[in-house]
View 1 (cartoon, rainbow, N blue to C red):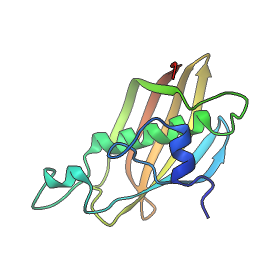
View 2 (tube, rainbow, N blue to C red):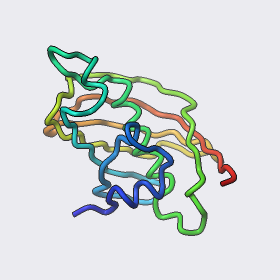
View 3 (cartoon, one colour):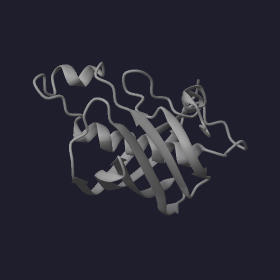
Length: 149
């Protein structure tokens, strides 16, 4: 059962199709950790060109999906603030590694964990898995800004 469904995710993240890359949140501890998922389907727009003869999800999009899961973790459980107008910005990516291709039909499981937070700067460790095996991992740094509606 989902902790957050796609409608609740859309309330917390500004991303929309085709760039919303998290379908569901399975587990979360506010400002500590999150487990989320993405169902990778053949009709994703990037598969048309990456690669037509053997579709593979671009690694940069796997990292982006990890970052979206981390941003969800930063907003999850924060009923004390309005996150509906919050924009998240990457400030750094370290130690990105890709271990296996992600193809149509795979289900990506994202595990993100807070490493440290100083004011509005967050550093998280993220792992993307398919069938329990690591597909990609990275350390992600981001900040956010609340914008006027």
